[in-house]
Image (tube, one colour):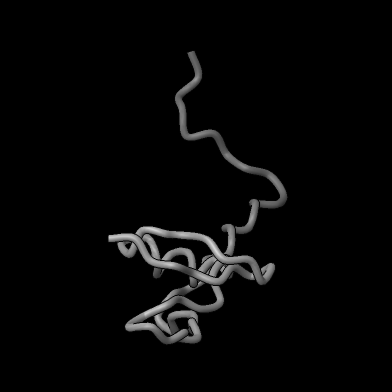
Amino acid sequence: MVLLVRCSDNTCSVALKSRLKDLINNGLVTAFLQDGEWVVAQKSVTKREYLPSPQPTGNVASLAAPL
């Protein structure tokens, strides 16, 4: 199903309903039209941002046996 959405730059476009949650969580959609009324989009509180793992510092031992 296709929905009319309001983008973060205040333009309107269409989007697949199955992708709406991702578009909202990525900050690309601020509202969508449902039953003739605009619904303000809110990011999911369950989405977690993962930080990259820290790079090791100092001496690192090789896990491979020497040839």
